[in-house]
Length: 265
Image (cartoon, rainbow, N blue to C red; front, side, top):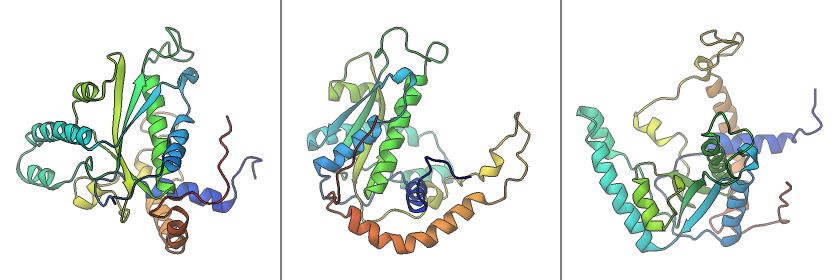
């Protein structure tokens, strides 16, 4: 059955391509700047995420200044040295080889915050699960991440940071929570697989092991094995012909082409 709101086949494939090719990018950033109109598109996509009680608790601090990036990188170095000490043996050696940030290489850093008091004391839908404002902000980050992939822009989430110290560097008010520190920029290439999977840190769990029917532990019947592999194989075949078009459309320059996007509420 075809729904009245269904995308065309090409539109639907583009959405899934963005999902499957999204990567947590820490390297291969190019020095080319992100044009203001492209960055605005990404932030607008983030702002159109769903939020509990239409709270829209997010704010975005855009960082291009080298000195600020250097200060944040120093915070990462301190936190990362501490984190490395939690591993031993081969795992410790592997950890130290991983590149886990692109703070100074990326043209743009972005701090995403959550204003937990926005909307007043009583926000519709938040009375029993207070953390839904944080979940909402994560939805905004994912919107930005997928839109960035469609623009040919890599995004990396730097989670090894003292958020309290980040707040002091950026002058973020005490009640506001830092939720994410992101690195954004055009890249020379997007990895075929997540870096941590390629490095052997962890493997992707087959999705059929994660689906339960009606109650926990009852495996969903009829879910084919290797569904992830099926999707990735189809996607890889289609990507070969789409890459050249994608590079022309997004490009390193990131210049917008065609008609201006309209953002409906």
